Length: 460
Ligand code: GDG
Image (tube, rainbow, N blue to C red):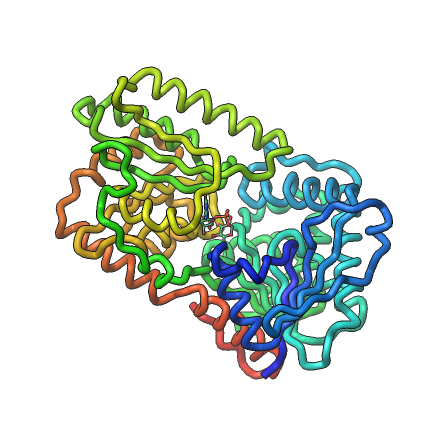
């Protein structure tokens, strides 16, 4: 079996991956089984001398080689905060209005990818399979090809692909398209994303679909397919506390768990809950919304803006409806330990997941996995989360429609046991049939078949 070489912006701390959970655990397990190599940023911001340093620090952990590089503060500002998080993140989430197309960001983004490629080149073996992750690293494959690497290289994008007209607004979209065309396989979260990328390549006159379904672009042939990210279901079933253990009052809990990001639709969620309390006064004092919203990218203006907006909204809803013994919104702007999160999922009557746009959204899947099948809660899910493509038995809502969301809270709270059980069973089956291990395996199998130059087995 070929060795797997993984490249991503950050390298997970392998000694803590099992506690952190999520996608990192499946990746860490796969790398351990294949004696793999993982290259990424070590999280440190160094001085200018770091920019010149092409030699990564090497460490071994349980059979996996971890290769890390530091970023200079200029690189951190322009490659990471600038191009990755102030251009690609907003545009790919269809927020052209807040993208900051500053001169210099793209060049440094390219330079960092070049430096990562140069650091990786001497570590590669002839039959390695290379798997590059996410929007920070789009040009990496192109830079490796420029250094003569002919190994199979796959790319997985964790965030959505925007519609073609939005993609075309990025000043450097042509360079990004050339970067994407350097891969043998591009994995996306949903079929909608696959459609959007193919439309963009055709609209931009960079690519055309071949008879076998592959894409020809910039004189290369590549495959583009959806590989929806899953979760490790069993790690959310492990804990079975008594219902109500986590509840601070005798109220019924609606739960939200989202990094405090403007893509997650948190103000819309709070407004919908306020509207629900206004419209259905019988529910006052009986229901709370617990929103766990750990901080993220705090130095960026768009993130401080959303934080202020949420503080104002929760304060105003709590001020308007709260009582001495009942506060409607519990807003927690801190990370919650994972073990506690599983218990809270299980003890919440409604999982309230309302992103305006999301690649997948693992919280929706984790909430379903953690329910008691005998008395499950109800998932309310935005149609704009990638997860909605698979989780059709959730109560699907439009997060821009506050009125519809307010009504859906009532529907969720009043849903009878049989309907809850039926919906939950169907959702659990779908989450279980596509675990994070299945995701890793199917992507790597498809990439390996590219390497063998046999017909690609692409999952639907
Ligand atoms: C990106 C894409 C895609 C959250 N708060 C706490 C906490 N979490 C954990 C959740 C979940 C993870 O973080 C969040 O994953 P999501 O998928 O919901 O969202 P992003 O962070 O935006 O992830 C997304 C994903 O990549 C994978 O491809 O699905 O679309 O945007 O696992 O449980 N964990 C703990 N405390 C918290 O307070 N312990």
